[in-house]
Length: 430
Image 1 (cartoon, helix red, strand yellow):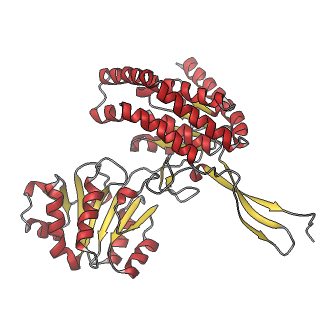
Image 2: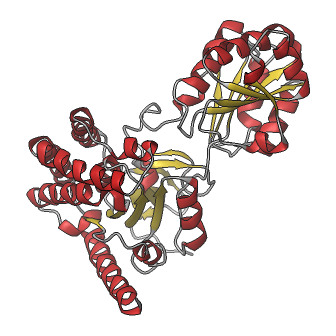
């Protein structure tokens, strides 16, 4: 076992060295070369769809034999449509403006120098993810367009499909004259590889974990490299007493029921006392009719029971419920005095992912935007919009609830940094 671990260490060190060398080439790669590589990858994926689906079927057979649950199997499975979507995603990334080399905020100083900032790649990005083979393509494309080298460590359950995708990515890189090592898929299922990847400070600049809370907690605890992450998504919708009732019903329905298992799905509903008597029973009946269990405070439960909602759908909320990310047909419900209590509750219990207010009061809307301490804050819109594609980023590598470097959906710009630049004409400091 000790010898095996040493082999993994040597292997990952070699991967890191190749990635660091490739990152220098990628930093100076032209937009044309990067876009050619992306388009070639897309073409290769379409051409080899049958081979990709065959590799995916092998992964699925092995996953079923290993007893993986239906949710994991669903994330692992590819289809004709999802393969086409991977290719289209690469083409969309190619169509995005190249952020690298952009100079902004140039200003002349009294000394005569001109000072500004230039957008540059982060360098080497390590991405660790579970199940979804499409992440291999999304991550490769985004890192490539942003001028980075990428080390991708997918889940062991997708190893065959990820190997097939890696070959097509390398084909696209070679066609554009870019190094194969610009995108490396870790070719081992040994978990020790993850431990090595998150501690190789000399080779890796940033780690991006994508997966369940357990994976992200492990990476956060073990990493010696900055991590772009979010642990969970306890998202809130606050219905203000100045809310439009129709908007509230539409937004709450979409935020909770459009898709249950995503990090931007609403998990808590706050309703202002001024409209709770008239509006909460309508909201509760709509949610219960869609199969949602409501876990409420005493005041909200009294109103909901009076609305004739099936008692099996109503439970008393515990303190833990205010913190919970259910990823299921369950919603925590609380009546609050107004916007002050709503903001205080959200800032105490939220995971700082996405929170929304429904109100027609401009002043309260602005207060909510300013004072709620989350990565995305919304007025009169569903929390389900917290997504890189919906924000116009083209695609996202993940969502960050941290406050340093990247916050919210992380697209191309989130995979870059800025450095100060000075333009002079012979000036010297006096």
